[in-house]
Length: 187
Image 1: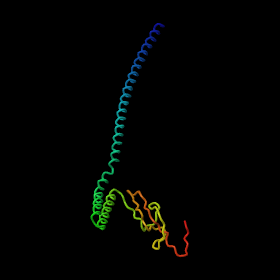
Image 2 (image 1 turned 60 degrees about the vertical axis):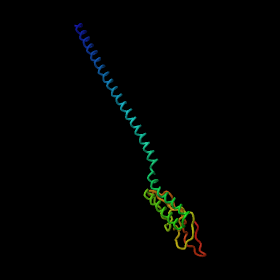
Image 3 (image 1 turned 180 degrees about the vertical axis):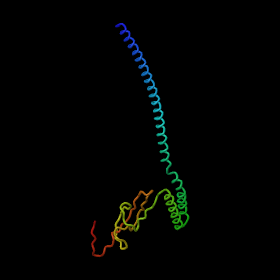
Image 4 (image 1 turned 120 degrees about the vertical axis):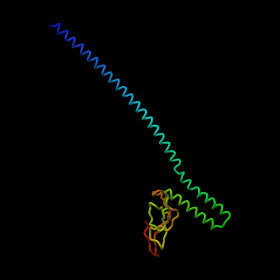
């Protein structure tokens, strides 16, 4: 009986070796499939990375060109203004002052019109209340006609570009009326 038992155990051992070998082969096959899948994913990653790098370079080049040529339309619009200024200078040599003045005024209007198309806007300051966000006081003066804090003279205009102040106005501000013998407190 022991002999039968030994054969049975031998048979079990052979079967389990066969099962283990089959299992090892299955695992090796699964590992090989995963290797191939990983290689395919890595290859896909490299291609996408290369595409992305090319996209970044293309976008950078387009951005540089956009910046480089962004003002081309503005420059084209300003060329007739340059022409008119040159004609006005030619007139200065040959004609009277009034015609020159008229030509320069028209050219200035044309220039302001072109710049307005692109978002530039003059800010009128004279007669308005002094605003430190839009005005830079270069002088303070007495004024019989204006209350304290009113802009009475504009030395240089303020400009907005697309609703953003790009240059404040240089102004003289009224310190109001001062009567004789009356003292005003100094700030």
